Image (cartoon, rainbow, N blue to C red; front, side, top):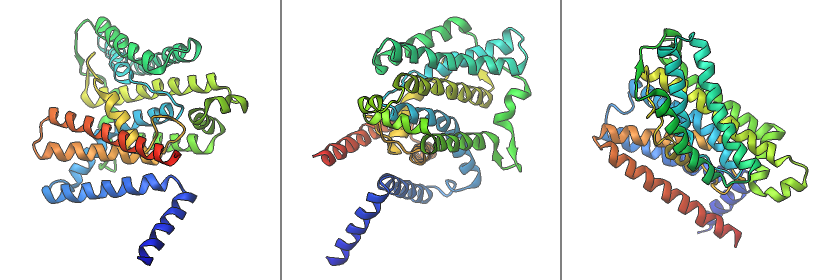
Length: 329
């Protein structure tokens, strides 16, 4: 009993000094348990080929999750990212296949267009004070509609090698470049959030907007910045996704928003704002990627995977909300 109490006290002391560990350690242990179970169920799960496959599949979600972590940390939300990808991939595909643009100009158009979508969201949220969920719900439909109109129902494929390079190249013949790219963006996001003044401002706004405003933080500019960054990262993810598929379709990115938000929340970032963990985001993306891969290897249909993803999202948010409300009492 004394030993148990001592361990409990040590855990409380440790998490008191490092609150992030209260989220990161249980999340990491859950991920480890998931790996053990899936490796027992399938001897192919821990093969190098499957590990690389998981890393590749989760890279696009990780790029998007870095931006979503910033958005949620600021107290906002963006459910339009899937449609931004759909619109940006039509810009890229039509510029390359229909209009004959040089590859680097088409990529700039894609990333620039996605960034402008983020700026469009920011304008209505910051300047017109429309709630983020309403704005991005509207642009979820609007951007997707523009994608269908612009591409006129066509599917383009067979893009230049320079565009496909990011998805087809491997360092030392083993590690995909897009995996390194996503990890680099994760590292940059972690540095920004924890080591820069603007990053700390993002967290302060999500924690208490009024207090942040009184302390001299430019709330509007900071909040606009996170949506622009989200759009920019959606543009990069679009280039990677289009290169992986070697195809451009207006339907691209459908459903990505739920997967990304679920990954970030599983990693410990609060939907209420003011609390985020980039390392937790990485673990959340990895856990959902491992889960999907394991279910696919077990022969579970895609539709049941969607059911499970939605259930996990509800459960995690419910548990986190209960814990946060209990801590406030």
